[in-house]
Picture 1 (tube, rainbow, N blue to C red):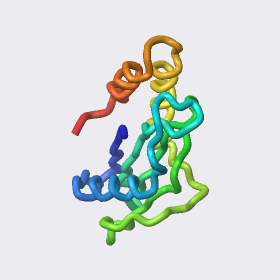
Picture 2 (cartoon, rainbow, N blue to C red):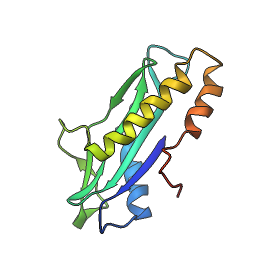
Picture 3 (cartoon, rainbow, N blue to C red):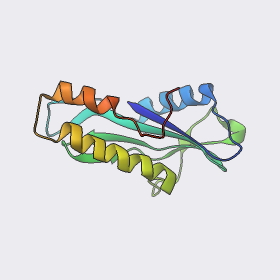
Picture 4 (spheres, helix red, strand yellow):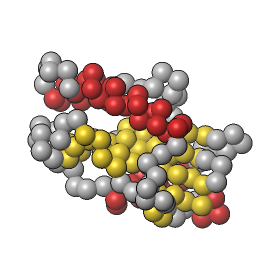
Length: 138
């Protein structure tokens, strides 16, 4: 799973909250399938952990059927209980800041996995190495 953090103004990165968000995401994701299965869940996903103004929000996406990006219901933890991720508003996919990352990931997936060149495992390695140019590794 590729993971990104977003910090709103005056919010701080918290590694404990990030770890808890990963555990909550794993509980919600379907069982991973095969990378080579064109009809299933490829076991590859993206998690965003947004330390937003109103709460910690964590949309989770995963690749299915080769070119389809699916998502779990948005996860959300209130600031006063940031150790407990509940389901947020089900209709919400993400804010514009989160969608910028999703757009980058879609383009990276398309260029790496759907190019028609190479074998899936090598292409996946290329995809996983693609990070948003302004992103920092933590």
